[in-house]
Amino acid sequence: MKKVKTILLTAGIAIVLAIAFIGCYYNRSHDQTIPDYNKATRLEPNYAEAYFNRGNAYAEEGDYDRAISDYTEVLRLEPNSTRTYFNRGNAYLGKGDYDRAISDYNEAIRLGLNFVGTYFNRGYAYNEKGDLYRAISDYTEVLRLEPNFARAYFNRGYAYLKRGDYDRAISDYTEVLRLEPNSEDAYHNRGNAYLKKEDYDRAILRLEPNSEDAYFNRGNAYEAKGDYDKALADYESALQIDPDNSDAQDAIENLKMTE
Image (cartoon, rainbow, N blue to C red; front, side, top):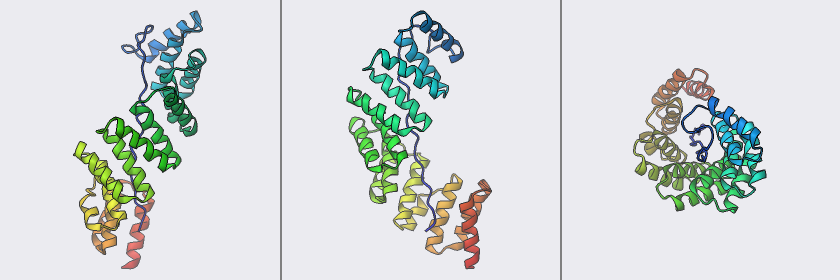
C-alpha cells in the first residue's frame, strides 16, 4: 500500500496573559507595549510582571528567543511561577525544542498547574518526538479534565493511528465528529484509518476530497480495490492541485506501468 497522509492538529500554543498594569497589553499593539515594558524594566529591574508581559508580547510576535529570555528572568525573580514555566514551554515548543518544552511543562505540573493546556501541549511535544505512548497518556489526561475537548480526541486518534491501533483511532475520530460534525480533517484521518485496516469501502466513503492528500489517499483505496481508472483520476486530481507532488507522480507512473 502506498504512503497514507494524516493530519495532526497543532498544539494550542495559548499564552497565559497576566493583567497588564503597564502598557495596556490588551488594547495596544506590541510596537506600543514593548517600549513601555522596556522602560518599566529599566526603572525597576526586578519588576517580574513587566518581564512576563513583554515575554508574552514577544511570543505573540513569534520572537521566541526574546520571549524565553524574559520568561527566564521572571523565573529568576519568581522561581515557582507556574504560568511562566507554561509560557516558556510554549516558546520552546514554537521553536521546535521539544525536550526543553517538555521539561518546562513537567515543572509547571509539578508546581500544581493542573489544566488542560499543559497536558495538551506536552502531549503535542511528545507526539512530535515520536513518543506516542506518553502523548496518548497526556491526551487521555486532557480528556479526563475536559471530556468534550475535540482537539484532544483528534490528536490522540493521530497517535493511535501512528501506532497502528486503527480501531482506537477510528473511535477517537468518531468522537471528534460527534463534537464537531463538520470536521473535514477528522473525516480525512478516519478514512485513513479504515484504509490502513484495508476496509476500502468505508475508506472511500469517508475520504471526501477537499485537498491533494484526500485525493491521494482515496486513490490509494481505489487502487487497492482494483478500480484503477478511479485511482488514476484521483492521483491526477492531486497532481493538479500540487504539480510537485512526487507521491502522486510515482503513483501515476506505477499505474501506467501496470496497464
